[in-house]
Length: 167
Image 1 (cartoon, rainbow, N blue to C red):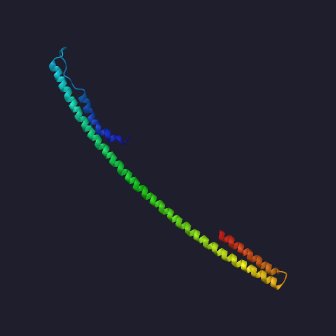
Image 2 (cartoon, rainbow, N blue to C red):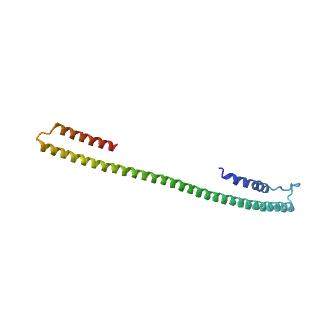
Image 3 (tube, helix red, strand yellow):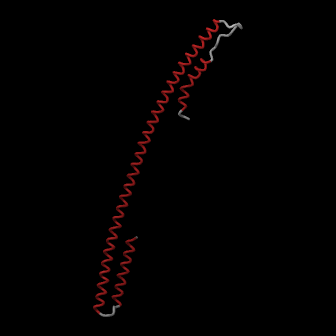
């Protein structure tokens, strides 16, 4: 609606001219008879009004064309500005996404390193348990309570290490 206001403002002065020219002020008839001079005068007035109307319409069309050209130019400018703004915003969002991805990869690498350490600790504890079992078998046929206690503590330590690394 607001776009048409400049068009209407430009057209209003010409509309009054067109209306005034379309209703010619004919000479008043004093006689009932229509004389050929009167008809010729009225034809001349009508031709002048039509000529004036044509000029006013041409002027109005030129003004309308200028207004439409200006509207199209402003529309093009606004669409270019909007496109630049959208590209900028998308670039910022892409940058944020890349940063988040880098942080995620770093966290994944840290988790992988912890898993590797945990696997090493687990393997070392298993080897120690096997050593203790072998020593227990060699020393006597019965496992000693102290050896069982050490193996239990080692297994508990291994479970605690696994749980703490997983958190």
